[in-house]
Length: 66
Image (cartoon, rainbow, N blue to C red; front, side):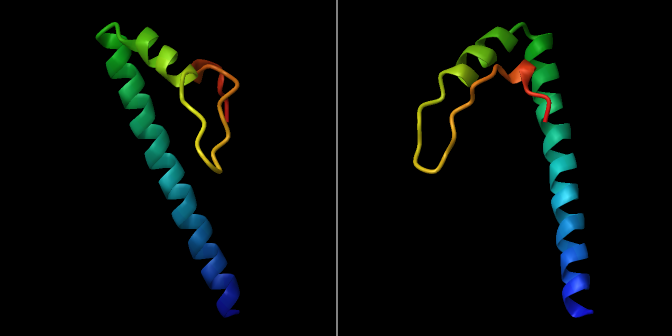
């Protein structure tokens, strides 16, 4: 019973973090679009250098759906 409570709590916290992250990223993208800087953001997104244990993006930010 104790494990089920912890798993439920962790799932809830994870979901909250995802919602906050999406809200923040959408706000940043709206701000960049408003100030005509979204193209630069897309270029930088595509130029992220490899890092250990980090998978490179194979799509532009606007093409990512999940």
